[in-house]
Length: 172
Image 1 (cartoon, rainbow, N blue to C red):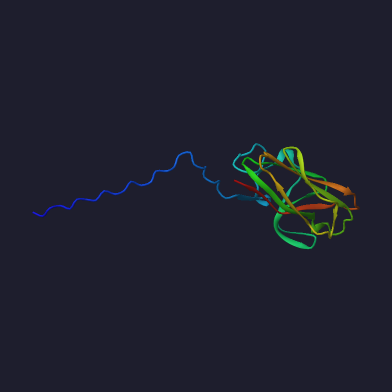
Image 2 (cartoon, one colour):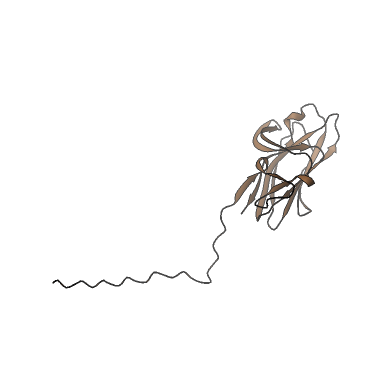
């Protein structure tokens, strides 16, 4: 009989530290406004367009504003409010705001505003057809609602359509 070799003890694996820093939150997730669900009551899993509190909204792909083509966004009338319940910890709203290319013959101008929980966070200058869309980058930390408002700055002879192009809400 051969003597058995003794197994060498394995060193204990390090135990996880207690009381250390909390794990970092996951990467931000982008919610394109062109893909948001419309909701009267809400599913509460992510940002949702509140249909009963919003004006007419056209969710679009391939829209044009200021002669530039954009992948997605929403188009609204020149007097509109779009209410979005965030339903998550959201960090930013970004877009390019401008008069839609379908407003070719209008001579009106509009002004864009972004509100978080009823407080105005951003406002554009007056924009007309052919003006370059302006960048929108608004922090949303701690906010539960987002409201996008378009107002007439100067009326025109025809209705003016306004677009929030490449509009994305970033959330965790």
